[in-house]
Image (cartoon, rainbow, N blue to C red; front, side, top):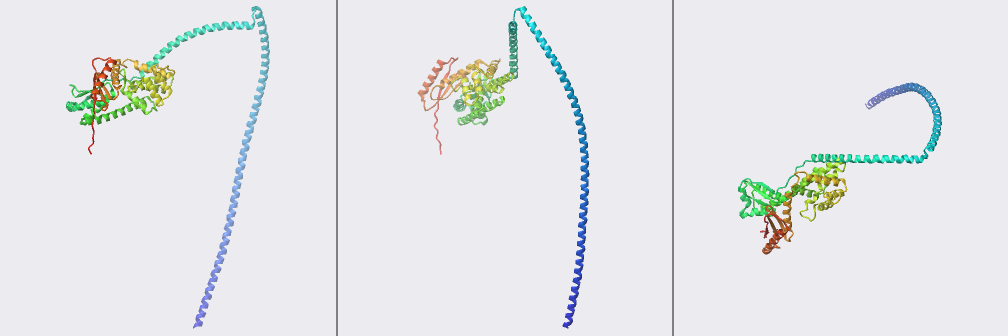
Length: 504
């Protein structure tokens, strides 16, 4: 049994080995066949690559030959053109040579004729000297002297004629420039008034403005320095003061109080302070607008503020800020017509009266103060010189300074620009306040009632009742001695003492 199984296993193993041998043989033959095929394909690819390379080489060779033939044709054409140009140049050279030869002959002939002319001229000169008895130099000097005399006479005649013509043309040109400039600069002049009117919603408001025993109106007049006139005019209150800034502050404050409805001394103080701040802002804004309108840049803030103060200043009834803007425009137009520096003329014209912004509070003329302000805030010397020279305090040595002076005269001198009476009136009121402020211990002073009364607010700590009476008498005496005025001026001294405590 075991022997039979063993034999069977051997037979199976033998068959398996035989099958494996057969399969290996087939695989070997297949591998050889595949290797042969691969070698044949590689050989075929190489052969095709060689053929392609040969064809490409042949194409490049033909292309190169064609390009070479084309270049040879171009070279032949260039050679032909060069040959033609050489022939033309040879012909031109021959022509030039012929002309040079001809010119040489002409030059020799000219030299010969010049020699003949020189000899003839020498013979004629010798003959003339023999006949006239003068040498060549003597005759030349004589002719030159006669020519000089003739030319001098003609020159003087031409100068006289041209001077008259130039004078006539200059006058006509100056008239044209000035008339054109004045026509182009048509600015409205605001003549200052000494009163302002505030409209009321009803006549009952007058009683509230006056207040109990007049305390409201008294507080408002004391704080602003403006006289409030409450008469029979329906629904209106008149504010009277020669100082337009004070009048504007009082007007704004009264309008705010009427709108708010709360009218009592504490509220009046608050509103007056706010109104003063608003007027200060408006002053700066007016100065800034004036500078922008003129195209003047780079002004310091303080100088702009001083410029804005001129909005509330008048000179002989003429608004000084409008006058300054007008002078700047006129000076700029004149500078443009004459070819001068337009920007310098406009800037100097705008600032020429800047000293009037502070001449009421500082010593000195408006020219001196204007020069100090301009120098203090970094203006250029040509601007400072124009300010200093516009009223001939110094001689104007630049054309821009002369133009500012002319523009100032045009603006101030044209019809309707100024009124003398208002200026004299305002100066009298200002002088009244200056007299009062010359005493020590004065807190504030206001000329009111159209100059018929001056109110003096003193420091309560420095004055008692007797001292206040003496101050009123001294001020009245000084006004009588130093001023000429119609009617009477009443001096009122106000000494106010406040005691304040805080409840905690």
